[in-house]
Image 1: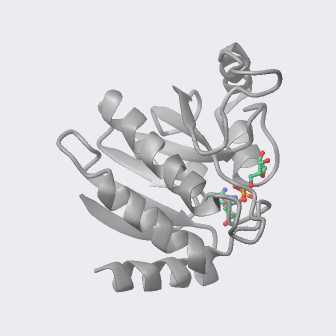
Image 2 (image 1 turned 180 degrees about the vertical axis):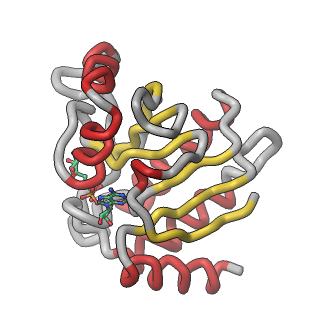
Amino acid sequence: MSIEIVIADITQLNTDAIVNAANPSLLGGGGVDGAIHRAAGPELMEACRALPQVRLGVRCPTGEARITPGFRLPARYIIHAVGPVWHGGTHDEPTLLAGCYRHSMTLAIKHGVDSIAFPAISCGVYGYPPELAAPVALRSLRDAQRPGAPLHVVLCCFGEAMAAIWQNALNDAA
Ligand code: APR
């Protein structure tokens, strides 16, 4: 598995799948969620609404992921992962964040995805310190490595500062 860090708008990437940093409703929002819904078009909202609710207002519990087509995106699939809101690190945040990457990779394997791009899940509105999120993500990605797993993983950062943090974490994990 190769891991590459890029600075890009994830909606522009032509990996087989891109991951969305969603909320449990899966009905869109701001940040990368908003960008993906805008770029994918209205069919995405229809597909998300059609996903079953596990409880009222929740289509994807925190720490899990769901998959839809990419519709108007270059990517074939969108994997919607719901990261934890940061509450200081004592509310299972690392375990839940690791779950986002693990469940996303499981869905990728199930759907024959060879290349997948992740945004910095939870590192925006949800307030997860990126210096703490990056090592958790990288460990989870390495633990997900098995036959059939995506050969190419892109960590898509939305700016230089974030890319530097993720590159440092990648260097430390080497
Ligand atoms: N491409 C790549 N990365 C992006 C893009 C984009 N087009 N837009 C934003 N980002 C980056 C942010 O800069 C941040 O580093 O994605 C990372 C995750 O930030 P958020 O999108 O705020 O996601 P998160 O922190 O997980 O919060 C999720 O925000 O948008 C709502 O509906 C969403 O309620 C959910 C919450």
